[in-house]
Length: 113
Image (cartoon, rainbow, N blue to C red):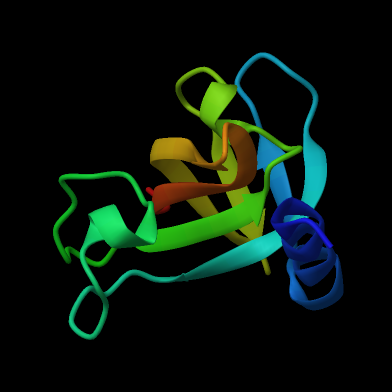
């Protein structure tokens, strides 16, 4: 099984329902993971394939399938999981042998005003 197919199956089986709200497109659903971001016990961001230059400031990490390229959406994209809304601050696809295998993003929780 190709790594991208394995990851796609993993997202479908274990991922949470996440709604993506692009600025100029219709919202859509993906299965992925949103978790608090902490680098204390992890390798460097380079080794993880996540966007660079991020410090541990209470952000969140999104991991999702490569076929939903939120890294190609314009600014102001939001994600929602379990009635919690997040802004996408940085995102990128992670490649293996010139093939995108998943998308990761740094998120910030939207604070109600």
